[in-house]
Length: 446
Ligand SMILES: NC(=O)c1ccc[n+]([C@@H]2O[C@H](COP(=O)([O-])OP(=O)(O)OC[C@H]3O[C@@H](n4cnc5c(N)ncnc54)[C@H](O)[C@@H]3O)[C@@H](O)[C@H]2O)c1
Image 1: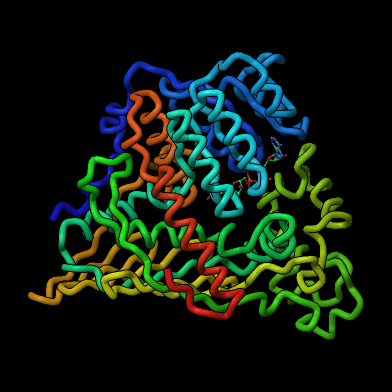
Image 2: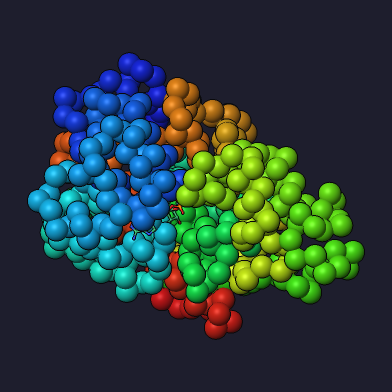
């Protein structure tokens, strides 16, 4: 077994993705994600060029415009203004907040742009289908930013499964450890804390994970369709969990009436203290706390005094689940259990165990331990990951996602996309059904 055969991470191997065509991309939503993916144009200027940016926040759109040397007529505060122009790029990246994916995605598809859309594709099943239909109707490519499908370690797991090494996969256990202070940041105080303002946390955080599980359980497609994979049908799904900790009832008595961490008497011993998280870890997430001007330490302190990120973690307007489990049974009886947990030291370093009839794989995020049941063999796989990139999040999968999308567009080859419309629609459906199960307190039969 070749221990790292799936990885294309050396500069020589990278050169196979150079084909002389520079893909032109418009970025709609110049926040964290829009900025990260755009770095591909800086690292691989022979493959990608950013030709337009759009964001209602002036500071953000102008910062990106400056970084990419854009003229004033290619800087927009409203994406409708781009739609009204002649098409001037090959593709668009939709990196707006979750509830604002549908309308621009459909409008750009209707205009003939290929689509790279952040996950979740949309916040309802119906809206997801509308986007997929628009992409298909207009014959444009749609890639959803399920970055985990592109990480070398997950591709290695997939390769090992598909090679038959562990026999038939019978069960998967998967954990998403969100990280205690990351959860407090995003899901208690931040953009994904409130269902009304964004959506439920299984969708906003873990549509990635159900997608990955679905991916691991898939087999290579033989029908010549647009997806490379053929997916097992889920037969039953159940889910439990909810908001169990971050509420007023659990506020420590010693905190008294303090509504903000800067004035809290126990801030120094609270794991969720905003003073600790943002001032001690500065510059962590400084751009999120201060989206509209230079995020200096002084401006971060002001944000903690006045904005949502300085509010006590037990006093916020959050209502999303801080832990949730999902159980799945597929039509051949194979099963999976997934846990999404806020209360972890590690942040988003997924743990996956895959049990087959002839062996098992255990992944801790950086290597895969294989145990064979027939001969007692043991082997450890440590896939190589590209090092010289600023897009190193999620095991550099941000980099690999961009590489695949850009290559797909330049070659007009949708098979380069691992997270296309049908792949995403089926895995998003699992998320919506799991949430339905949790809310109705019942097992959902498909
Ligand atoms: N793939 C991943 O691993 C991953 C990780 C984090 C977030 N996300 C997703 O990426 C998306 C963006 O998240 P983010 O963290 O970058 O958020 P962000 O708040 O940093 O950025 C979103 C940007 O969109 C802008 N925006 C709002 N309305 C707009 C409009 N009508 N037109 C254009 N721009 C508009 C905002 O001003 C903001 O700058 C979300 O859907 C989020 O769930 C994905």
